[in-house]
Image (spheres, rainbow, N blue to C red):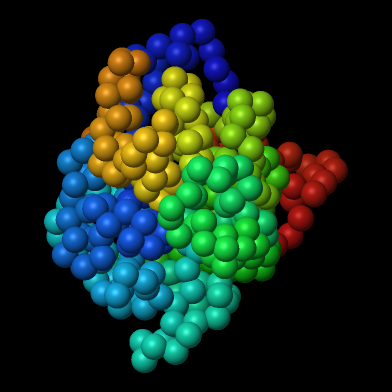
Length: 351
């Protein structure tokens, strides 16, 4: 991205898109019973509350009636339909780290390819599904301290070990097939970029015509195989990203607020919610997803940057837009064109 004179002035920045992540699949209801919704009615109401507080993108996961994270396609369909009816303007973004179990309750294999591709079969269709690019370690405990998990389930020894050893498989053949299926269903791929090599792989896929759509990305700074939350990593990522891309910053534990403040100042977009952090900055109490959204609305207002309406967010993210060719995709996203003739190198390898 090119940061020219005046890029910090709010009049030269897009309205701020806030993504809310209120369903918190990595926690159990007893970790924050006042804010983790369990019943379908409460899960739908949580979307309404986040929207009314200022969030225009909903990062969606689903719980069963017993409070456990759901792996049933029907439950996701039910929640998406309920949110569509309650807040039809809100952008629905389904988390992509899901494998679906058969409806009769048989256990799903963790992140198996076939069940992960079922995200393209959600009905009603979501606006976005998050797509991880390149297999990565996802040790969500690495940059957290003992106080971040004290008194909550992430601190239980068996769960701590499980989260420490998490891996997100995203091999090339799976990613390419997943993008193809999502595109065919009219669902935008919202890329989760864990570091610069994630972005570089996405660029190559665009140049080869694998992905033909708007470049919408989350820079995920949660360490443990992903970027550390520091300005050098973010600046390196931004320097590579084209001007037409849409970037949301994402972090975890007490890094969420400062990373979001950097994102607001730079004209990027932000994500918050109890999926990412439970505590206020002094760890004297827990902050609900709505409280976190309202905090960002206030801070953005002090920067002088307005909050995006749902319609503005859809226009900025180009929801529902796809392109015909690699060349059109490159131009629309602000990339330099593919080389024409001569030694075209790796950028023009056949699909």
